[in-house]
Image 1 (cartoon, one colour):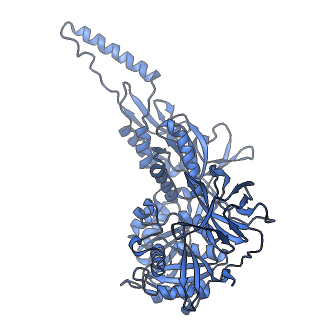
Image 2: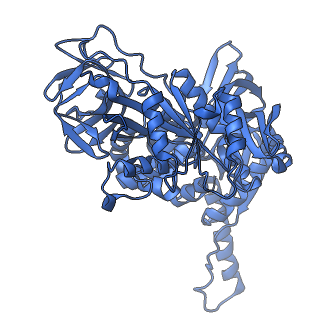
Length: 599
């Protein structure tokens, strides 16, 4: 019997908080994949951060054995994916390992920004999409209205849409039947040379790199000598198996199956997500297409508070990159912060999650500089300079123009908040593109907005102004000329590079004033007066002064002529004048911590 026709590989995709993980829980519960005593909410979300924030950060794979009404057992290889825009790359990698996708939409909220983005990703991968309207048990659910939205967008019939309540289990058994009937089985050939796609990986401190793979063609057994086709390195497979959802070893994996293999590699750089695994003895002629390289959108510097932890930070980032291939980093040195790394992220939430994982999983105490985007500078010689770090801003060349990245922001909001959202976009230097009404109560807005305005607080403000109902998706559209300046912070005449950042000229003065006041509160008083200056080039746009710490040099006097007192005060005055000229301000690491946390 041809086993491959009983396999169904699919992902669950949706906007954030539309019930993906809860639906996965019901699948595990109905099929008894996880014993009842071990079952918990969001079972596949095994990171503490995922449970605390209530979001999926990493894609999670699991094999489910489903007994269909025709008497046969079907293998469901399910991948639960993140819903936030910052983790779209996780979704795209998961979809490449599947033939189908369950598109989950909240019956109360309807189609949201990330719903559309996920639809386009699934269509690009030529997947069979099963629309699922979830949370039909809610009192404010609008299943008919939401189903019409899906019919208009996908061109499906109303009979193609599944109506479920992942919380209560209503409609889930019928959905599982739809998966068998509508999602095609894999098309791989077990007799061809081995081709396995690495869609994710992890690091085990005892056993080395664990590669999560989808077998496209051929088969693999424990002990097979495999080759990573892109990295051109070989190893003997120590163990292969499946996710149940815990790692469960098997003797063999064949075409169409999803599982893991323990490579034995201790060097994390020898395994790359998107690489093709083949049998060294029966080698495939060409690798699989892999994935598009993700492009970082937000950059910041990461430094250990304790300089002795630099090597630990380096090893930790390498291991984390194995599990998060959208993370980019290069070493850098700061005069103020020492040795660290310039890291690239897909967005501000991605940046926060990476830093929190480094702190929790590797016990690192970190400093992070102000988040920045990459700017393109056109010089007088006709060359282009890409600046990801304000310290690299050119000062000795003629600058013709500076371009900053722009994104197309797609916003869904209830109609009552349209005015507040348009004001927010205008305040963030957004340019209006389009507006439509998917339903009488919901508005779809499109704006072109500088990425630098999105990464700071845009998402938080959007949620605040729409009482949590607004949703955002954005996509890089290119670069546009802008009046960008570099703000330098000087303490006692010395520029502190770690504080510098790039900003639009119209917002530079207000940000400079805020920063100067904040630094005045944070920097401890010295024995001499310290000037805090915020400058654009040689022009100072804001200034604050930290008064000198007063020491009573006359306290030891117990009598005598007043001239003795004057003499000591004059001597102190001369000393303070000299200190002001030659003294240096030592900035404690706690100040960087407080300031960058604020930013």
